[in-house]
Amino acid sequence: MNPRLCVAEGAQLASAHVTTVRVNASDTVSIETGALIFGVHTTSEGPRPAPGAEALDQALDGRLAEILTTMGFTGKAEEVVKIPTFGARTAPVAVAVGLGDAPAGDYDPETLRRAAGAAVRSLSGTATATLALPARTAAEAEAVALGGLLGAYDFTRYRTGGDRKPPVGELTLLSGAAGAEDAVAHAATLADAVTLVRDLVNTPPSDLWPARFAEIAQETGGQAGLSVEVLDEVRLKEDGYGGIIGVGQGSINPPRLVRVSYSHPEATRKVAFVGKGITFDSGGLSLKPTTSMDWMKSDMGGAGAVFGALVAIARLGLRVNAVGYLCLAENMPSGSAQRPSDVLRTYSGKTVEVLDTDAEGRLVLIDGIARAAEDEPDVIIDVATLTGAQIVALGWRTAGVMANDDSLREEVVRIAGEQGEGAWGMPLPAELRKGLDSAVADIANLQPERWGSMLAAGVFLREFVPEGVKWAHIDMAGPAFNKGEPHGYTPKGGTGAMTRTLVAVAEHYAGNGTSEQAV
Ligand code: BES
Ligand code: MN
Ligand code: ZN
Image (cartoon, rainbow, N blue to C red; front, side, top):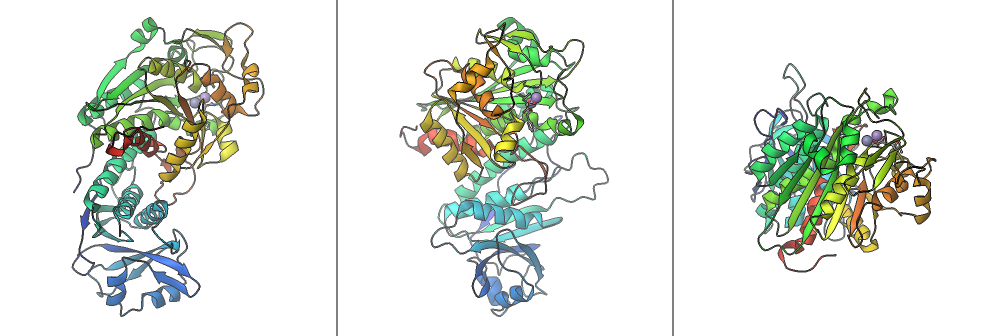
């Protein structure tokens, strides 16, 4: 059993329940469980049980395919149906989940993650459930465990009555694969980190303002073994963080810059992550319309992902040095708010004319990026819910990845893809720089036209990356928050997007335990 990470006492953030997972190498016969989850493939002859479902099929006299056909089940990806076992099994109910066509070789991990997530989401308050999905290798076992844990997420803290039950309390994964225990422990660490980020994103901004986020980073980060340093508004002003101060000055909740760091004695490489942490984005004096504002508690998803990733990196003990910057501010309109046409002197020394106070993410990020560069990392990656234009261009599930280095951009896109996190490479067209010219300052925070706004934001950020520093920018305005229905292992609301990708990037730079050089 893997102890779950809990947000510290007083943080009042942790989900009401924690789901655990353990590995059992036996078959399903001996296991008492509330629900038995198995996979089903589509074939030209109808649905066929996937590997892992053999014992259940035998107990039902080999009639599982027939039962599924009778129920109209096809086995297409994420299709779910519950079947009563009437005592044929120690589980009262079996849950069939579609896996689509059977693969020629190993399973695509994302197919398994989504299937496990969809099946677990269909449970309602079961104390225990058993995952009898394909888990013939450690990689398959990890995918099933991760999908199951992520699918078990529920944000119940603000529900009264206590009648809403989380999907499941404890998961058992059936796998005899070598290395399954370690793989499942790895999955549990990732799931903990994603859960933490989802909780942070879902927490209403009245309970998560910059100083509170910083406190949580200190408590939870400290427990995970991270060094945490918090710069308050006085320090930020003294040290010249004009971008963060400018964005935060309209709120009664002053801004913070949090530096979280992890180091390994044998590390040879250092990664730096910078997260946009706007705990609420009203737009400031350039106020957003109501319908664009109600989900802007999610505008700290980038800082959430950076923090969650650092916690996971520390708990995994990766052989890499990692530093994360959480650029925290609340963007509010008030008598003390920055005005359109104000000029900020940012940490880099460059001045920025604020033409639109709603283009605030880039203002806090450039201070974080300039500070991160002082750590002399091998790479800087910023993660941000930066532009509505990202959603226009790529939709809800695909983040845009831009970089000042082609191979780095391709590497980030590839690594995200391996985690099942949608990401696509985007250009930083040189001609967009001209649109950011300011009549009074070094640069303006906005181009006059809306076309290509995701790219223009990237071009703006690039101006603050010092020469010779490799940098990538992930715009995940859409993926950070699911306004639609749950799907696969993704719940409604905060998704924890890009947390796992950042961990995987750190693993890549750690050389996966070898001393091989990355990127
Ligand atoms: N936080 C928003 C971007 C956003 C939009 C995130 C939708 C998630 C969902 C950001 O601060 C913003 O307001 N961007 C503006 C920039 C514009 C003023 C250049 C936008 O995209 O409209
Ligand atoms: Mn904004
Ligand atoms: Zn914003």
